[in-house]
Image 1 (tube, helix red, strand yellow):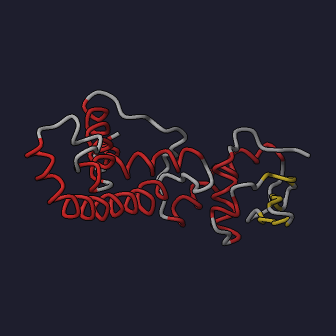
Image 2 (image 1 turned 60 degrees about the vertical axis):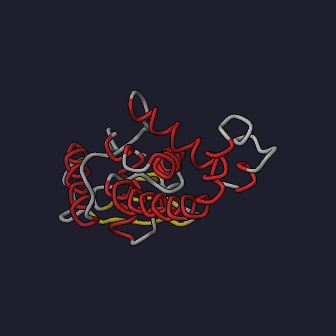
Length: 189
């Protein structure tokens, strides 16, 4: 088997998504199976898919240039960016502070009983403040959940898809979890 140099896993996924209309989660395990002068073959989920070269190549020396052209076609056809996000960047600096503050707020306001006498929040804050927080708990928690779910949805359907981050990858889940907690800060990273 002759494989073109420089073809990465995300390019294979894009080829399968664009040329063979496979959803990204299914195309995630795709591999190049073979290359000939007339087509590129992929194996994915027990199936074989062939993508023809138009026009056929006259030599294998053309392979690298052809797969680059194909990837550009896929990126454009799928409406993706030519920048692929391959790693998760954890919050740092002011983003880390925001992440911690929102995490603590989610945990504290997750149950009203946290603010009742004997609750772990009531044990460390003044009783008047604990009583106030007990009163506003549902008005804080539910809007926070909705807002953060919307932000996570926007990250998943917008940024992560645009930058070819596959739902089956750990990177996708790290970005999604981070966005759910910290919200807009993750968009800046």
